[in-house]
Image (tube, helix red, strand yellow):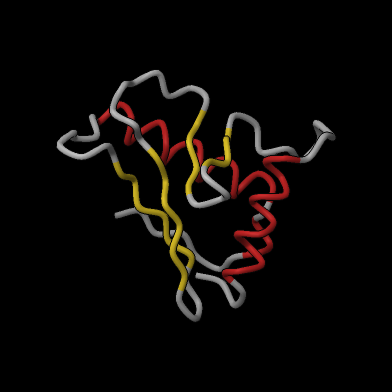
Length: 101
Protein backbone atom coordinates (compact mmCIF):
# COMPACT_ATOMS: atom_id res chain seq x y z
CA UNK A 1 0.00 0.00 0.00
CA UNK A 2 1.31 3.41 -0.95
CA UNK A 3 -0.06 6.88 -1.60
CA UNK A 4 1.75 6.97 -4.95
CA UNK A 5 2.08 3.58 -6.68
CA UNK A 6 3.28 5.19 -9.91
CA UNK A 7 6.19 6.87 -8.11
CA UNK A 8 7.11 3.63 -6.34
CA UNK A 9 7.17 1.69 -9.60
CA UNK A 10 9.11 4.48 -11.31
CA UNK A 11 11.73 4.40 -8.53
CA UNK A 12 11.98 0.60 -8.83
CA UNK A 13 12.64 0.99 -12.57
CA UNK A 14 15.23 3.70 -11.96
CA UNK A 15 17.05 1.57 -9.39
CA UNK A 16 17.19 -1.32 -11.85
CA UNK A 17 18.89 0.68 -14.60
CA UNK A 18 21.06 3.03 -12.55
CA UNK A 19 24.83 2.90 -12.99
CA UNK A 20 25.78 3.52 -9.35
CA UNK A 21 26.09 0.32 -7.31
CA UNK A 22 24.76 1.96 -4.14
CA UNK A 23 20.99 1.72 -4.23
CA UNK A 24 20.89 -0.43 -7.37
CA UNK A 25 18.17 -3.09 -7.56
CA UNK A 26 20.65 -5.86 -8.35
CA UNK A 27 19.52 -8.83 -10.38
CA UNK A 28 16.30 -7.32 -11.70
CA UNK A 29 15.80 -7.03 -15.46
CA UNK A 30 13.24 -4.81 -17.16
CA UNK A 31 11.63 -6.59 -20.09
CA UNK A 32 9.51 -5.59 -23.09
CA UNK A 33 9.42 -1.84 -22.55
CA UNK A 34 9.06 -2.04 -18.77
CA UNK A 35 5.98 -4.27 -19.09
CA UNK A 36 7.36 -6.88 -16.70
CA UNK A 37 10.37 -7.93 -14.64
CA UNK A 38 12.57 -10.98 -14.50
CA UNK A 39 15.30 -11.84 -12.03
CA UNK A 40 18.76 -12.92 -13.12
CA UNK A 41 18.86 -15.74 -10.54
CA UNK A 42 15.87 -17.41 -12.20
CA UNK A 43 17.30 -20.29 -14.22
CA UNK A 44 13.97 -22.01 -14.83
CA UNK A 45 12.63 -22.47 -18.34
CA UNK A 46 9.04 -21.49 -17.58
CA UNK A 47 9.32 -17.85 -18.63
CA UNK A 48 8.61 -16.53 -15.12
CA UNK A 49 7.91 -12.82 -14.94
CA UNK A 50 6.50 -10.29 -12.50
CA UNK A 51 3.78 -8.18 -14.07
CA UNK A 52 2.91 -4.94 -12.24
CA UNK A 53 -0.53 -3.40 -11.89
CA UNK A 54 -1.77 -0.35 -9.99
CA UNK A 55 -4.87 1.17 -8.54
CA UNK A 56 -5.32 4.27 -6.39
CA UNK A 57 -3.16 3.14 -3.47
CA UNK A 58 -1.80 -0.29 -4.35
CA UNK A 59 1.08 -1.52 -6.45
CA UNK A 60 0.71 -5.25 -7.13
CA UNK A 61 2.88 -7.78 -8.89
CA UNK A 62 1.55 -11.01 -10.37
CA UNK A 63 4.01 -13.83 -10.95
CA UNK A 64 3.23 -15.45 -14.29
CA UNK A 65 4.69 -18.19 -16.47
CA UNK A 66 4.45 -19.03 -20.16
CA UNK A 67 1.13 -20.53 -21.23
CA UNK A 68 0.54 -24.01 -19.93
CA UNK A 69 3.37 -23.87 -17.40
CA UNK A 70 3.11 -23.75 -13.63
CA UNK A 71 5.40 -21.61 -11.50
CA UNK A 72 7.33 -23.98 -9.19
CA UNK A 73 7.61 -23.19 -5.49
CA UNK A 74 11.35 -22.43 -5.67
CA UNK A 75 10.72 -19.78 -8.35
CA UNK A 76 7.87 -18.28 -6.32
CA UNK A 77 10.20 -18.06 -3.30
CA UNK A 78 12.96 -16.48 -5.38
CA UNK A 79 10.77 -13.74 -6.82
CA UNK A 80 8.95 -12.90 -3.59
CA UNK A 81 12.13 -12.92 -1.54
CA UNK A 82 14.09 -10.74 -3.95
CA UNK A 83 11.21 -8.29 -4.47
CA UNK A 84 10.57 -7.79 -0.76
CA UNK A 85 14.32 -7.56 -0.09
CA UNK A 86 14.75 -4.89 -2.78
CA UNK A 87 11.81 -2.81 -1.62
CA UNK A 88 12.71 -3.01 2.08
CA UNK A 89 16.36 -2.29 1.43
CA UNK A 90 16.05 0.69 -0.90
CA UNK A 91 12.49 2.03 -0.91
CA UNK A 92 11.07 1.39 2.56
CA UNK A 93 9.93 5.01 3.02
CA UNK A 94 7.82 4.84 -0.15
CA UNK A 95 5.16 2.38 1.06
CA UNK A 96 3.07 1.71 4.14
CA UNK A 97 2.42 -2.03 3.94
CA UNK A 98 3.49 -5.18 2.10
CA UNK A 99 1.16 -8.13 1.57
CA UNK A 100 2.11 -11.47 0.05
CA UNK A 101 -0.65 -13.66 -1.31
